[in-house]
Image 1: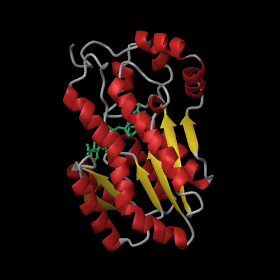
Image 2 (image 1 turned 90 degrees about the horizontal axis):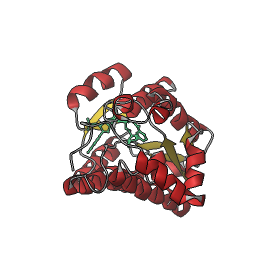
Image 3 (image 1 turned 135 degrees about the vertical axis):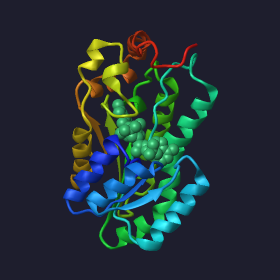
Image 4 (image 1 turned 30 degrees about the vertical axis):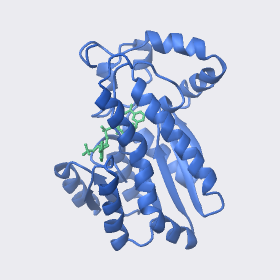
Length: 255
Ligand SMILES: NC(=O)c1ccc[n+]([C@@H]2O[C@H](COP(=O)([O-])OP(=O)(O)OC[C@H]3O[C@@H](n4cnc5c(N)ncnc54)[C@H](OP(=O)(O)O)[C@@H]3O)[C@@H](O)[C@H]2O)c1
């Protein structure tokens, strides 16, 4: 479980543990992971998943202890608020490294363990994408682009692994109130603010995706699935709406 030190990852680790899973908790903040691991009886691994070499070493350490891995949850991620006109170039690169490449490196690093588990009954990869993977949300342009890339990776991996015993699932949450994404405080639109959900709901969706073998899950279904369909059928309309949406002053870098 990557990104287990807060938000959706922490809630999912709690839920999975309650269902009998043993979790390896991955993130950078040791002071957050240690007490959680102690509480859940899990293991701690510190890693910046945007660093490909570090993820390679992480994979070796985990596989050394766990030759078979039944479930990988690629959840770690960061925000990048701001349009393409305001966001710093370094952030455009970093959000791609963490939100897209990070999951790719983790999956590749742990693939031997997933294959071992698959041959003994089955294995799962869950990618925490976002509705921003299907809708080009202008106020967080670089974030949306990284999430589009992550969804394409997830779908193509699912197709490549068909019949291998490893199921790949994409979970696409809408706005969720977490530490890195304090949506209730930063979203300008009162309409969007009404649809903000809490992390336990996403954790349940992750578990359901695995247990019911669902390929792609949007949570909550309404209104986000409708907007995703509109993005395909009426991109101009969705562009007008997301172009008018935004974040409160002070929550994004100045242009
Ligand atoms: N909240 C939303 O509205 C929302 C909506 C759709 C999708 N999502 C996605 O859900 C996932 C979880 O986000 P969240 O809302 O739960 O946010 P969060 O509470 O800020 O959690 C983010 C987690 O990712 C970890 N992380 C960030 N950068 C990392 C890095 N370079 N290496 C390793 N770990 C890193 C953080 O741990 P450390 O800081 O300790 O490393 C933390 O555990 C993300 O992929 C996000 O894009 C969120």
